[in-house]
Length: 283
Image 1 (cartoon, rainbow, N blue to C red):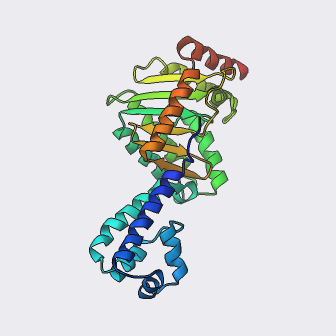
Image 2: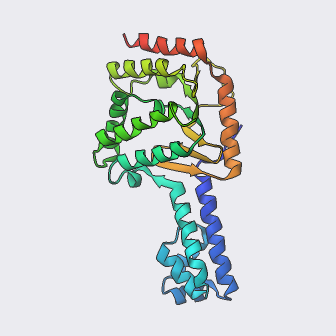
Image 3: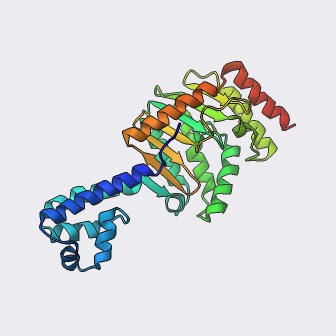
């Protein structure tokens, strides 16, 4: 099977915005050069915007609309552009003031989600992380990105999401690669505590936890980690960015991938056996 690039939703949305702006220009009977002259910028900028290569600023959109005699459409187009901008967010931009705010935003998203399907190939999901594990991970991220250190506050905000395992009628379906259990992301004591925590929460009615063994015959290759919220939004985490996927076709791809990954996973006693083996390997 194949999936589209996780950034293609953002690019498609940017191109759709570009088409709307292009239609405004054509409806006004203007060439690209005439529009550029009215806007007071170089024609190359108009070309980049119309091709979807550059996302226009609020000011650019207002200027474009005025030039086309379509002032009444500016607010709607600005709202659209801001929505496009939020689909692809670089981590360094998100963490420019530290990590706490992003974790609080995630809290709000999980609060609004009824069913969350999660696939992890690197670390356990934030709502299943212990404070010690989350601290070790967030220290690594902060050092790598060179962003402000508010790890203690960010950890508290991240761990707070675990409350939704116990209240509000939320449901979490989690799939992890066995490698998640084995990577030494934290020191042995923190890893041991993290793995034991997984055993503790497994019986919760709100949680289904599956592990994909190293020995599973693959029908879907290991993917980037992703969260699917109520089948309306997929949040994909790459090294450099958080990508929000909303296009139905791409959401269907993630649902298909999740179903394939689920077929390879083990649950219950078999999953507990893999977790205990990982704990024993730390001894």
